[in-house]
Image: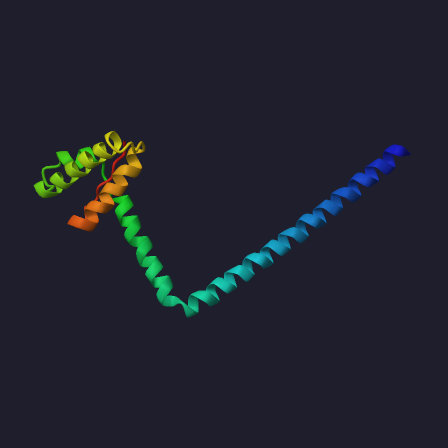
Length: 131
């Protein structure tokens, strides 16, 4: 008799758990749809901002997708000598920042240097350091 009541309790608990999971899924579905509707409503009135963000995303994706290692760019014969000089200058400034200024992280240092050179000398296309 005790086993039968235990089995009955297990079935009731299973049904209760199943109902709870269904209820949670319904609430999550409702929440997702509400957030989606709010986002669509916001995007309708801010379409210029959305278009600008999409253009930013495409531009950044193009840069990241077409990135090449610095060593490969320096060995490429189709890259102009002025661009190679800029890259070598970035490497020298990066070494100076590490040796003399005590900056330790090479990736952050080179990114900062590339940003500075971009601001001063123009854009360095498709350059990425993988070291």
